[in-house]
Every structure is written in C-alpha cells, then in structure tokens.
Length: 234
Image (cartoon, rainbow, N blue to C red; front, side):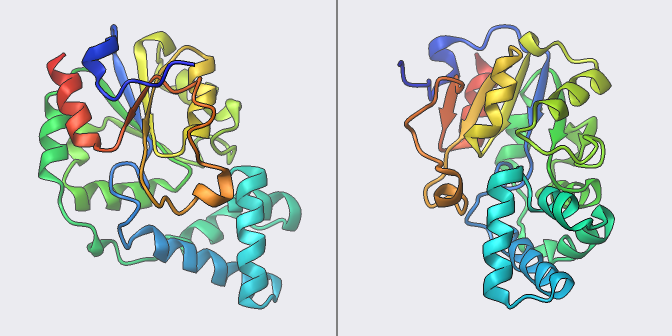
C-alpha cells in the first residue's frame, strides 16, 4: 500500500468543487481544552440520566461511541434518550477557550470551491466554534447530526443525505477529518480524503486510530493550515 501524500501538490488533488470539513478536533487542535469539556459533560449526563457512578458512565460513553459512531446514538437506541436534551447539555461549555486562527482563515480564503461543515455535533455548537476561530464567513452551510437524522459518521447514510442536500458531486469533493475511519465512506463514494493526523488524539485508543489501514486516505497532514495553503497554491 502506498503511503498517503502529505503534500497535495505531489499527487494532485484534481478538480475540487467543494470542501467538506469536520469540526471538532479538525479545525482546532485535539489538544485544545474545548472537547474535553464536552467529554466531561457527556459523562455527567449519562450518570445523571441512567443513575450510574461516573466511572461506569464513562465506560458506557466510550463503548457507545465505539459501537454506534456517537455516544448519543447508543443512548437513543438503547435508552430512548431525546437527542436535543443531550446535545443542549453537552454543548453548554466555555467556547472562549478557543483562540482565533488567522492562518487557517487566510488558507481558507485562498481555497477555491464551496465549503461545508459536516459534524456529528449540533449546528449551534458549530456556529460558536466557527465564530471563535474567526472563520465563519468561509462556510455556506453546516450539516449537523440533526440534518443527518441522527445517523452519525461513519454511517454511510449520513454522507448520502449530506451529498443530496447540498448537491455535491462526490468525485469533485474533498473531505477533511481528524478520525480516519470517518473518511472510509467518503472514499467509497469517490471523494478525495484528507486525514488530519494528531499525536495523542483522545480517541486513538478507543477507535484504533493507527496507520495500519489507510487505503481510504488519499492525503494526510499534521498541519491543516499549511496543507490548505499548499492546496490553494496547487
């Protein structure tokens, strides 16, 4: 298997009409103190709703994430949890810990094509993140978990719904993600895929986030702004 290219100019991106970006841990570093807040609130929600100790709630949270794609999906299917109650609770966090990303803003400005957010989170959370990063103006739409009928990545149905809603041509679309298993359905329908690889990713142990099977990954980067700069110049 050939290693994915870290330089979009080396193998060529081809014709890209649209860019689909994941949100959390992709447009900002996984080392940020934002997503850990969500993680803690998920645990507390489960503990309160299911009357579990925090350690048992944590184990259930991660098991559902691994098995269902999101903790929410497992809670909905197994426990009948109402999604809006969960999403409102877990996204009630301090978004001010995120700093503006002027380099990412400039890189997105130089990138031709439509830009869409595709997230397993809520639209309101995505809006707050984009505003804090200072990059909201680049994105024409947010396709959130409600828009995907609560079928999370990597469920292929969510990708089909996203493509249909926004009239995308998969072979002229690039998708950018921090979790490479979420790129597999994108590659299967013909999208160009970009994995934002990060050391000490919080989900690495849970998802087996390693480099052993990357046939579905066309490009990999440790520095998204730099990679986008190169893509915009190619």
